[in-house]
Length: 190
Image (cartoon, rainbow, N blue to C red; front, side, top):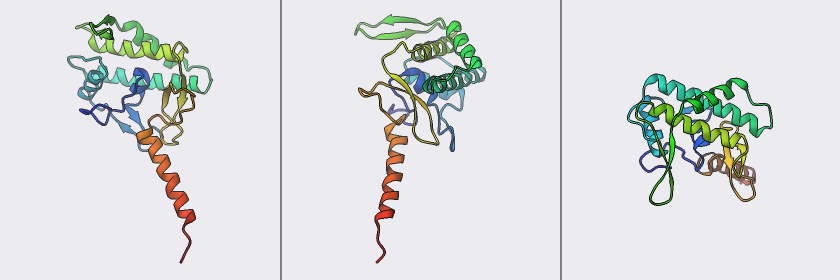
């Protein structure tokens, strides 16, 4: 979570964090990047700063996000990947021209082109999704156990048994509901 943007649910995995910009998909959906400026904010806090963003670029970002969600959901369920989603992910990956650069501190940073910065940023996100969905990273794709969320997330816990996309939101809400139900059942009338 970024102190400057606490409503962005940022995880350690870029692609699944990006799909988290639409939360509670199966409940009262919350769009966290409703405007081009908010997309630029999300990209900046994710290390992919762009000078500006257009409405068309925001719409393309939404397409990519939903495609990643659909493909990651299918992969987590061990189902065939939806071809329209695969095509959009691949197209965004191909369109991007970002380069990985090494910082003096020994970290990787993405260098985006000035003319196509948003396409480059989306290309980085698409490439990250490809690596995750293809099983090239250590971890497993899973779906949030919250019935209103069901977000795809990348579980890198040691046991690979994580149940929630975010313990501070979905996990906490489910624990609270379970506690309230148990408390209600254990109260005896006077």
